[in-house]
Length: 124
Image (cartoon, rainbow, N blue to C red; front, side, top):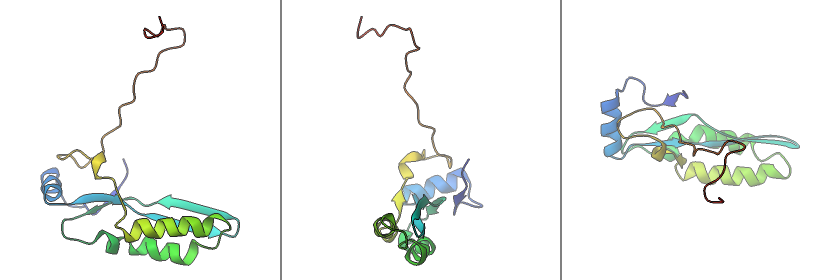
């Protein structure tokens, strides 16, 4: 399970209450370039309590990107602009991956795939 920054010491009920009041989960982007190599990554998930600035919480990732992101050619400047836009806009909201009463992300349900040799009823 991925670590979630900002929920330390909170129980499920406190997290659920904060979410009903406007709390959300976000991921920030950061970019690091080394001349011809550019790496675009996402941060750990951060819980933003109601009333707090998500853009302010993302400033470390924004500053890292400003310093180290734009150096790579050609993707450095392109990814840097995108990451800065995401972070200054409050990060990527991933709250929809969380159930209201649980602090753990829900696992996506994969549709069943036919086994090789099975007959697809739609084609029969």
